[in-house]
Image 1: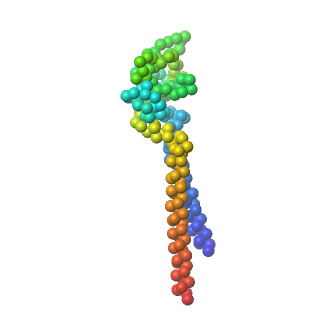
Image 2: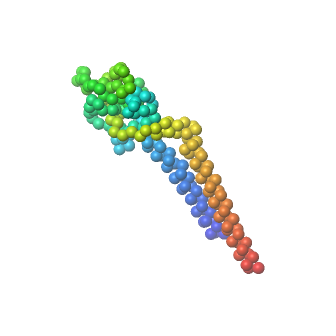
Length: 183
């Protein structure tokens, strides 16, 4: 009886560990990839508009790293009106002893309305992954959360219930065989 308790406890702990790994680990990886918080000085953003096409189509994920200075031609992510924008630096100017960057989307006909200061720049784009951003945006929705967390967790739980049932059936069969053998 004591042995059965520890065996069942082991099964339950396996379920908990697998649930954490299966459910939370993908969520943490997803959060790292689409995080607004720098990790080792690197941030990632989803390209939401076509202003940088064809180089950076809508749905790409761009990875940026922060620097003290940026150059003409650098593609940077910056905050403007509470929105993250990814555009190219096309010019620099000094105004009131402050370095300003003029930006423009590659697909746009005109430069952005205002120049930006370096403190508004979140980082220079050094890498991008096509199309993954569309998936990342989807995962931020309720159906996406259900797809990433709920469905895999349910599948895992069902498989574990089947596994537990099979193990219990084996144990019951072993006990019945032992009882029959003692008769």
